[in-house]
Amino acid sequence: MTAAPSTYSGVIPPVVTPLTEDGELDRVSLERVVGHLLDGGVSGLFALGSSGETAYLTPRQQDEVIKVITTASAGQVPVLVGAIETTTNRAVERARAAAALGADAVVATAPFYTRTHATEIDRHFRDIAGAVDLPLLAYDVPVCVHSKLDPELLLPLAAEGVLAGVKDSSGDDGSFRRLALGARDLPGFSVLTGHELVVDAMMLGGADGSVPGLGNVDPHGYVRLHEAAVRGDWADAQVEQDRLVALFDIVTAAVPGTASATAAGLGAFKTALMLLGVIATNVVSPPMRRLDAAETTVIAAHLDRAGLTRV
Image 1: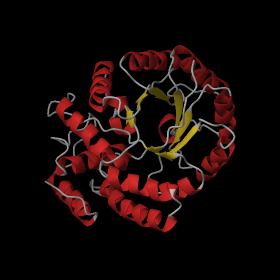
Image 2: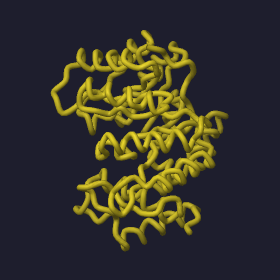
Image 3: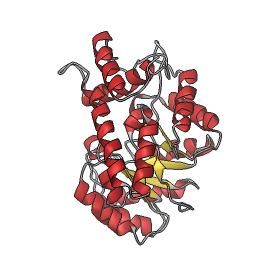
C-alpha cells in the first residue's frame, strides 16, 4: 500500500464514455474526448466515474475504457480509475484490473446495495488500499450509495496513509468544510469537490480542485475558474462560475417525467459533446434513453449562449 506522493489538484473531469449506435464503446470518440480535455488544460482524468456510466458497463467494457484513456493520455496527466462496486471483493477485483491496465490511482465508493456499518466502510477502504500498490481516493456520493462518508471516517484513514484523497459529491457543504479544515494538517491528501455549481465557493473553503461532469463539455471554463481561484481573483472566479451555472441548465433539457436525473445529466453532456463535434452519437446505456431532436435543440441554444462553438 502506498500513499499519494503528491496532491491531486486542478480540474479532473469524470470522463464520459461515448457509445456506438449498437451500445458498444466508441473508441475513436473516446480518444477525441481525451484530446478535448487535454486541450482544455485539465490536470487529470477520472475514468469510470458516474459520468462515465461505470455502473452500466460490463467488466469487458470497463477494461476497454481504461485502455483507451490511458493510451490516449499517454502519461500527460494522471488517470484515476473508478473501482465502484457493491462489495469489497468486487471492488478489489476492479482495482487490480485498473492497476494492470495502467491506472495512476483508484477511486472507490462505500459498499452499496448491502446495508453497511461505518466500521465496515472503514474496513472496505483498508482492504482495497492493501490490495493494490496505487493511491486510493474515496468517492462520497450518498445519493447513489446511501452512505455518507463523514470527516470522522475519512480523516483517520487519510492520516494513516490509506486514502490519498476524496471526491466529495455529497452536496453537504458543512461536512466538506470540516473535511477541508481537517485536511490542512495532512500534506498530500487531496480534497476535491464534485459540486460543479459551487466550485468557486469550495475552492475558497479549501478544496484542492474539482471533478466536474460538466467539465467534459467546457474544460476550458473550469480550468479558467480554477486558475482564478488559485490566484485569489474571486471576482473572475465568480464570473466564470456564473457562466458555467447557466450552461449546466442543459441537464434540464429532457422532457420532465421521461428520464431519470442520471439519464438527463448524462444525456445532456453527451448531446452537447455531439453538437461540439467531439463524439459521434449521444447514445446512453440502457435502460436510459438518448435525448431526442427537440431536446437537442434546447441544448444547442445553451451552448450558443455559453459561447461554445458547435459544428
